Structure formats: C-alpha cells, structure tokens
Image 1 (cartoon, rainbow, N blue to C red):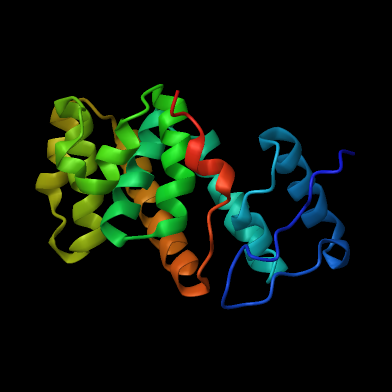
Image 2 (image 1 turned 90 degrees about the vertical axis):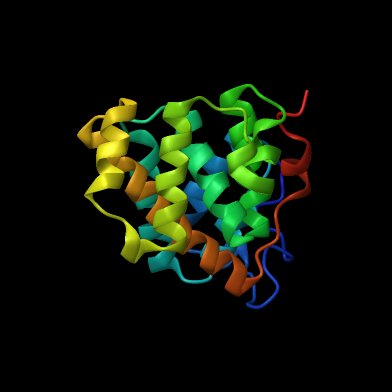
Amino acid sequence: MSDIPRVDDDAMRRFPVPDYDELPADLRERIDEETERAGFTPNVFAAFAYKPSHFRAFFEYHDALVDDTALEREEVEMIVVAVSGVNHCYYCNVAHGALCRIYAKDPKLADQLVANYRTADVDEKRMAMLDVAVKLTERPAEVTEDDLDRLREAGYGEEAIWDIAAVTAFFNLSNRMAMFADMRPNDEFHAMGRE
C-alpha cells in the first residue's frame, strides 16, 4: 500500500469528512482501488463516505453507467460536463472536465462545454446528444418523443438513448449533492489532460 493520503479533510466544506480508518472495510477497499488507479483520492469518494450506504449505491450506479453503456466513454464525459456546466457545479466541472479532456484527447473540449456547450467543436450527432441532455436538465417536462426521434435520426440506438438520459439524470443528482455539500475538486484535476 502506498503512502498516498486516502481522504482530504477539505473534500467538502458543509459536512465532516469521515476518518478513513473508521470507514467500513468495503469503502476503504474501493477508495484504495481508486487512489492507486488515479494516484490520488478523488474528493467525491471522501465526501460520499460520509454516509456509507449512499456511497455504495452512488458508486455502484456510477460504475454501471460508465461500464455498461452503448455510449463512447468520451460521450459520457461530454454529457457530464455539459450538464455540470449549466448547473454550475464546480466539483464536476473540474473533475469531469479532466476526464473529458483525457477520453476525448482534446485539451479544449471541456472548457468549451462548461462555458457554453453550444460553442463546442463537436459534430451534429453529439450536439443532438448534448441538446437533449441539457433540455432534460433544464426543462425535463418539455422532453418529448421528438427529442428521442432527433437522437435516433442522429444515429443513436435505443440503448444509447436510454444511456444519454441515465447519465444526465445521475449527474444532475451528483451535481446537486456536490453543490449542497460544497465538495471541492482535487488540485490534480485542474491540470489533467491539458497537454
């Protein structure tokens, strides 16, 4: 086991960050795996450890969304960043902005998506995806069959359309929890994928 710190006391500002040594074994194991993979512990892990049952459910669903998807991983991150941009979620803008840059191999894309996804250098297919994700975020009652038809016409299959909605819905939840708890992005995220 490396000597990388497992949790940052400043992971969130409105609730206490739990002590790593007092966490249930399964949470420590998951945190250790992520810390070894990333080289640091993303603060969302420390923050959600505040309530272990929610940690388990949150990350199990997160993993299903990114591991069992008809979308490309960069598309998942593009949705997250566009949604987080319109929601003004500092944590997710920074953390998923880094992942978007890495998976898309594009150092500018995340900044474009955060500032105004409509200005991003993406093709028509992905713009349709982002338009529907943002509409579901801002005006969910206005989503109609026409939006699903637009995604079909753009080239997305039924499973991918489901996944667009699922990623959007989950990260709206994530944005709201991150903002409510005042989760802080790790410094490492700011520079990732920019070169």
